[in-house]
Length: 238
Image (tube, rainbow, N blue to C red):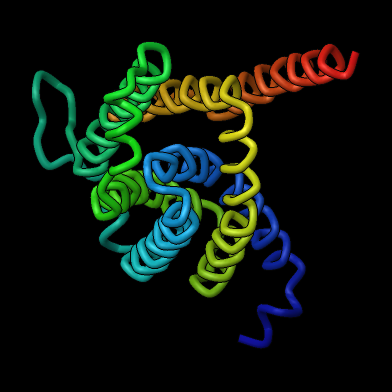
């Protein structure tokens, strides 16, 4: 264990993996923040903590089942030359769920009624946590496969995942507050989730979309939104 602390290659893989885990976790944080908004204000913080704690437990548990994780990528059935694995099924189901959830939220935001607001105020805490845990499983699987591909030591993987989730816990409340205070950013975040859901479905169909393209689009759109917010703020000041 001590020799890992003095190995520069181990530190390099740890830092690289931590950054990647945080980047991969942004989608999870956005979804948790939006899902928690359906709860009364007093319960939202607890839902975010439980959701991210669940993500941490899932990721660490999956890391200790590396052999099983690797086997998930092996096809268990072949249909018309297409090898279907359990990983493919999980990504397909998670991607479709994410698209459905984001599209439903977008519809509610655009066509929202008083009935929607009432339902939103009385959303089930257990129901919201269940939705968060379903997406945690999908994002955790992607995260763990990334970790296995980058680091060679289980201790490094666990440390990087724990640190990344702790960073996400700290960032979750400010992100949620910002999204709640600026409705236009919520619509943008929901559009991001649709895009991520489509990428997951594509992965499940063996058409990998480089995440760099997705995150570049997110950064560009986020930059435009920041300019819009600054313009609106200056107009109000005038």
